[in-house]
Length: 222
Image (tube, rainbow, N blue to C red):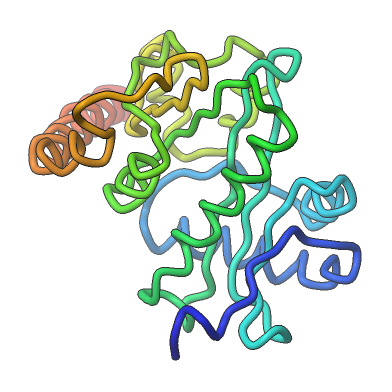
């Protein structure tokens, strides 16, 4: 199996038939990782496909292999590439990167002046985002659109987010701001490579501190 065996393209109505399989894998993947994810329904995925705001990957053009969609917030001032998922049988060949690149391309085409942002608990996704020009930021730099934050309610870590007054959580926030893409001696990816171990240690410490507080609170009120 090689990355060239996959077709990564903007999804069309012909791909709506994969909606149930996509959301099932999203939920199962989140369960296995023990991390939170905003739950989506097949109808929501179908809507994104109909709007031309979804990317799909097909193995040899016929078998569903991966998916991602884009959402806008704050009057289209912010754009998020969400719901990235790769079928387990097609992982570790670089497919997630290809899907993210295509979603990034579609986002920039549709909303060239918008800030692209994402929340992730994975170092691998942070690396992909860094290659695209994203940089880690505080939550205060994200959209204040209530609809976006409402989507976090189905996440298992939502109580942590609210206990921190939406200023922090287990996820790391990253943004691509087209207004700040002026170039320089060091690219975001080079900066990420230098600091990847630091990021990893920080994420583990952050998870330990936040989850410890959650467990202590649960024990006190048990």
